Image 1 (cartoon, helix red, strand yellow):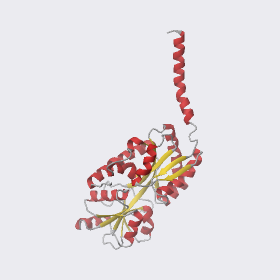
Image 2 (cartoon, one colour):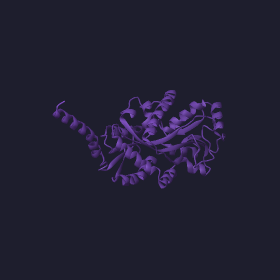
Image 3 (tube, rainbow, N blue to C red):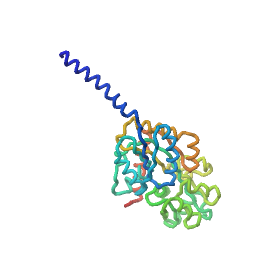
Length: 327
């Protein structure tokens, strides 16, 4: 090898070591402009309120404003489509729910994106526990008695839920399958109307969420038969889980998580995970989120990715067995 050749080789090796550093230097100024977070629900909902609670804290730590943009519709598909098509630079994120990030792939005949290919998970944000509630006038006083009544009167006992394709709908389907019963499912436009109709005596049961049902349970206007989470809830310590009440292994929880377009640099994903995680671990923020009826669930990028995959497999089986389809 000549001197000139050796010199070129040395310079090439030096350049190769410097390029990653140069690349990091370009990314290390992130963020240098506001970050947009597309929320797949209308303003005023629990996910919207939660993100607007987190945004100032995270924005302060990042040194840039977090801009919340509501894009509801098609079970979350409209908003997440925008995120999937955005540049993978960390400036467009999406807050999606269990439906759009796990169940919709099995609910819709055609999807505008592939969750596992088109998104980079950042962090789980919060979980929303569901609770099976009923009218105090219903003869059944326990979940086992509800199941017994449904078995004795197949296709006659009604249960309201938050709408076709929602997590509450799928939770109801899972309950039917594991209990081996047939209910008359009554879809509503949200858990609020379903819960109110139980209060009004229009339907005997509902798969509700904690924000809609908690005050009525505490006032004695609704019977809480069971919560759908694996463990009992601190807000309802005397209410058993569905698993404890007779269906071991039952687990269904609504959840929200933060994603970015696939290909977003690892360093940016790690920074976002760290800052949102820190905000979610703040005791004051945690207390506020719990006051909304949700549980903050910060975690690693890897754990959220694994959870999305497991939830996708789980709900695919439930949807297929129940033959649930959406246009």
